[in-house]
Image (cartoon, rainbow, N blue to C red; front, side):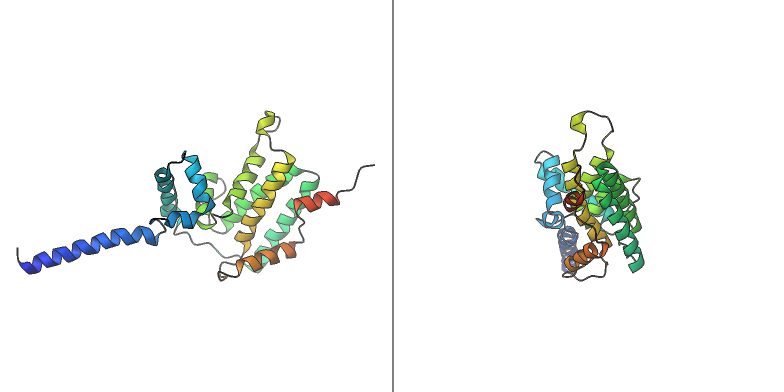
Length: 218
């Protein structure tokens, strides 16, 4: 084998090794990459796997492989207004019908996520997995609302969501809602301002403030 051929083989091998090392990092799968990308979702995955970090990272890496390339469809201003109005109606319903309120919010988030290009709400687990890749900080609010809405009526007391639990779920779900109605073209410093604007535009009170407005019974 000629020296030139040997050199070429060595160069090709080196390129393959470098590509193998850099590709996972480019997808947020290098050392610490998944933890940075998923934040609280990373800790949740580790806890679900009984502290097995490798198993958790395999699961999260699979989510990135399946959903990392998803491109969220932007919403037109009129669409954002319709979603915001629907949220307001659902949230204000909490005062008199907490369960119906969280059920509607659960349905709303499923439909909104689908409208943004995520898997349809009928594929709940797949939809949540995709949301966790792109909205890791707030996806758990959707889970909490879904659990509260899915609790069987008339089931065992420990299986039913109490009013305070539903209130907390609704508040946390609002963060994901705000993320999903924020324009996709926003710069990294803009989402917080948009989230404030959305809340102001809807005029939606927090569940706790709505509860304070409820007339006292005589």
